[in-house]
Length: 310
Image (tube, rainbow, N blue to C red):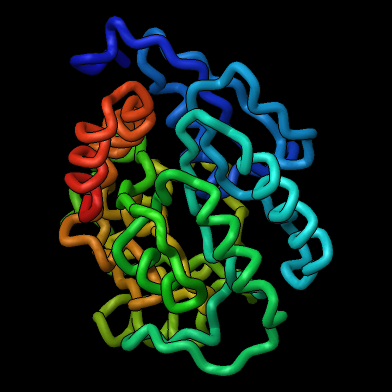
């Protein structure tokens, strides 16, 4: 992917994430899609959060998730990795981007302690020191990238974010996720993916209220490469999670396939004026952000201000 202005740009970029073999969740799909779309002249080196930090020779460092997956109350390892990367960035002189993929300042990940409307925090079980750790972590970066307006606001309700922020939605491969079957030819059935940690008990009723028969499939029961064909078989898709979704790519993939999306306010995509349009320009915007490393300070500030609201 060659965007205007990139032809003469040469950058070495370190992309840090907690990669798990065989796992391709929303964060992994988005980050790998960005790597696939890297403009000519940009070299991307992918690192694991557990690797010993070595930032020498990189113009840009992009840090996504450094929290171990699985037990989200494993605060000891969470703290270990956050401190490790905070300290590594302390002496880094390049351009550092925190690409927040989830709700990492929340020790339980789901942000159940933050209300869905006013984004006001209530008492919870998260360790009190976690906020301070993440405040220092965010402060180690030049800019913090969020996936939706709602995502940014809910993280701000969890921890103070003083650095400049930008909004860039995750990328969706719209050459694959598209209308294959006209929506009017589909049965009035709403697809729901069943996952105890993700699906709210209101999901089926949400479908019925909208005039659809709910159909529940086990979570991760369909290979990702088969999702476009699957979505084209439904008139609607319900995305009604218990945990807050920073974006909720299923909602936008379903929309791209012509489905009516029945989503709750705990889905970050609903906070975008047009989430599909935001996803369409995701990778160009992401690489424009990375390319800010080569801009003079004044031009960089102007670019970040232009990306503050997506």
